[in-house]
Length: 180
Image (cartoon, rainbow, N blue to C red):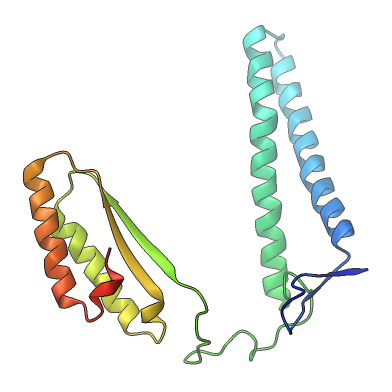
């Protein structure tokens, strides 16, 4: 059984056996978590159990489950990538589908590059942003990126320097409407 991923899209992607894939993932995560938890209980039980050790095991189980989810997600993704399979449809992905170097599909959405700062050296911060902008400007997708400086600087002198450095960056960027 397969479920359409996008129904309004003319190129509908079919997801084969979604329930079986969810059950397999859940079994891998729960099995790994159970194994790790049993091992942890064996380690704690070796010298007698205290209330603190019970709390430690109680905190260990959900934390280990979280790590297990990340591990299995990464491993499955690696195997699919190594096998050249699409993660949704499981169909073989050709070199054309992966876009050969130098070939780019136009981006259909915008991306915000956000730089949070707090009482930092404005010249260093703006220089880093300028380097990112220059690197992106060398790609065909440069206009799809907007840059945001989020400052909660408390020092008025640093805040004025940030504003001046940001204004200077805006003057040097071709599309200053991309800076916010």
